[in-house]
Image (tube, rainbow over all chains, first blue to last red):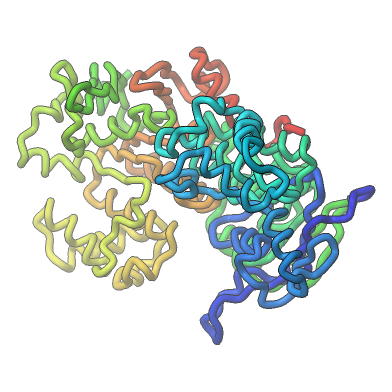
Length: 302
Length: 267
């Protein structure tokens, strides 16, 4: 990661524990990563691996149990009210469920007007309506048709575009997208991913892309972090990690990705349940040692 | 070719509305051979789940199967069965695994009891015999038989899904309909379960009607595949043909919408 600008958002050895005593769940263990302008980081893992916990820490929805969250180099827990307001504007989220994340009682125009009123003191009056139209055009929706509609009148893909427009309304620097396409139909997924990538590039946004689908991670993100049981087990350049995986869990994950070139009947392509269980057991243990596989590619020793 | 096990002929299903009917399945015909895995792929709303429900006659009003349709299992028309025959036909001939099947276990009954309920309904069987059969079925799906006294919440999602599959297999059905059986599970668990089902169908000889939106997965598992669009079966062929030489534009478009792990990247 040479020649890169200073990170906008950094998680520095962040841990999050739910509950206490022997039943405590360590959802995130010593997580460190940075988001840079114009770059996407994909956090990949199965359900329960802690990837959404990372997103929520970045959104300041959860306080880290340990470690620090840095915004433009400064710890956020020391921030004053004005800095917090700036953070709230600067870091926006796109949710998984396009059906639940819009208010059924309000029009699309209203959904976009709220963040403008809250975060954009520079535009008022007629300029607000013009901005709403511009935002909808940006996400490739026709403002004349979509703005007066209610969420139930739109398809899932259209709603997710509205969600993206709503996030963009605040003029963010970072977008956290938690499984933004997993509830959409396969044929519209790519359109939404393309749109996110375009926004990232054109508006120089930092994108945190949370997903369980490692193939889309390759498609969208320059950097990748593979999570298992609350730890990032392997991270670095997306192509390097996927083409040359070093951690047993990453290898297991990649071997199980649906691949039309491999038939289940092929004895050489079998994923052994016993080996998978052994990999899970080893990967769940705390792994302190970090090894550099190559430039921009790191792995924890399992 | 041997005689088909399942033969769906001119299946047309409408959802009856107050003013208009919605045609969910439009004149669909396909065959499934004994021991074959046949896949139905398509987007949500294309009618693939409606077909799955219709095969066991689990569809409910306002869904209406039009007169010219026939669903033949071994030559017998499922649509003509009376209630008694139908009850006998379900589970014994055709079993079903749904998308959230792992949540279809009764949370307050032990696994053993849930097997017993199914076996007892369809067979004269004693407790001890049922227990033996339960142990045998659990072993098939790699779950230790000594866990049959546990409750569903004591198992992981993947294990619960395997238990449901074991219950389905307990009566030796000849066809299992699987509607997105692994969509709620992560890819490693999905692979483990489908590999196991593949081994079992080779061993036990049942056929599978497999429904998913994931074309890559479908090609790995299925012998033949049908692609659905707007209630119509627009293309069917061997898995290899659907993958390598798709003919219909929609099939090609569907393939193009999956980013490949080692394929092109955006940026």
